[in-house]
Image (cartoon, rainbow, N blue to C red; front, side, top):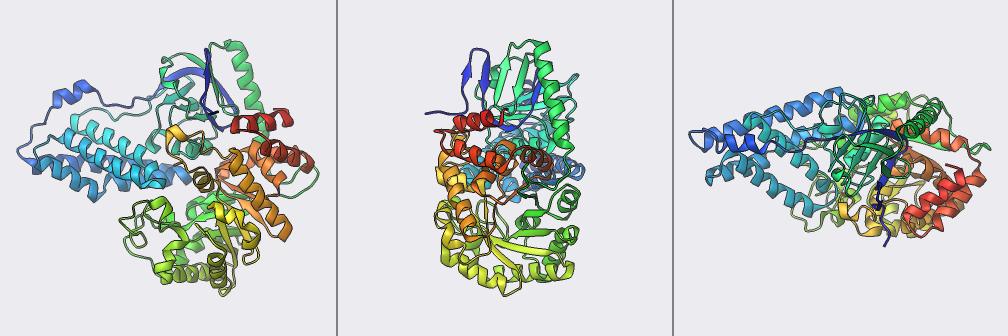
Length: 563
């Protein structure tokens, strides 16, 4: 079996996430609270469990306020995950578990640790987005305990010189506010291509490698070179040669950053580059980039902290804020609620599912509550009419042609373009029939990879399986893209795979017509596509599809493009 996490005497390798080369001393993240401080604190000096719970409340509130303040200074994905972490720190269920442990006679530190462990087990078993939040839970635990015992919060120390940040894993609070001038690359031992670390690294635009087994064993201060295109972390390199590589990488990145669109191959084939957004502020920010619209508006992220379903009028106001920046002739693709037990929204989630990742989520929510979908579509249609922005609507988690047809009928009745996401392998295999009933398809490579490979994308031991370069995943993408070419209808990619300039080249060669990604990734992808002809893109697709594993696929495309 070939996995991305291989090593030699002087190098380690993991999954490459953000291209670029960086060099410098290793800086370890301080992940744990001092055991001596915890020992000195003991059980604290509290009169009773109620007093101890009050101390917990104060600590949890302070941690939540820290996350909220960081979210206010962040944008896009960073702001989203920090806001969610603030909500998790204030979670009543977590507080109840702590209270129960205190009443049972545990000290405050043990009560917090036990409650978090209980929730970690629950979240891990739920899979999907909830499993991704285990890192957030651990971060909250460390910060609450640090506050209780009077220690500074754990996290990223301030570098005294440009350094390579190395960690077992990174929480959103660790990666928010990083200065790219001082933290020049991120390397983690855990995580996959869709982890928080990967998403934030793309937003920062710094080289990143995840899933690099053994990287925490490299001593602090060791000089290393990180290649975010190959996934290699090298020790013992000559510093002069290393910094020459860094300078060449910097020059190339500056060249890419100057790209201003519109996107096309070198021989003039137009390619739509679009942005992924979650709310009005992220939509406005993305609108200033050289994008031709929004390829994925994640509507559910507007409602994570809502207890009640917003009215049609409220929804129209929220959606209008996202659509307005694109009323200049660009378009927005709106995804209906992708909520379920693994992405809990109070007014939509069904509780008690044994396997939420394969349960009632996405379009399936409307099976038992059709009014939820109808009201959301009414809100989207009202926003489209109000702003005049061309609006396409797609449903997530569509498994059958009949599901697609029923959804399309509802969308078209409101005067909007209808599409579905290809996340379930059955949708890819039946793409030609899906396109008989909808106007477009959008491939969500994150979930498609997870379902095709039967591997939770947050399971570190399975990171090599949740790689979008996996041959089976590429074949499913190629099948879907070919169906679009045959039907003369657009097929896009809106997963993290779209943000990889190397993979983007192969995707266009397969017949993909649009790529949607974090706004920060648009310029490098556009610049890369502008350097190659469509014939070269087709050759890249053939090389990737013919490779036996992800590493070989990357290497084949890199060689073809002369990287």
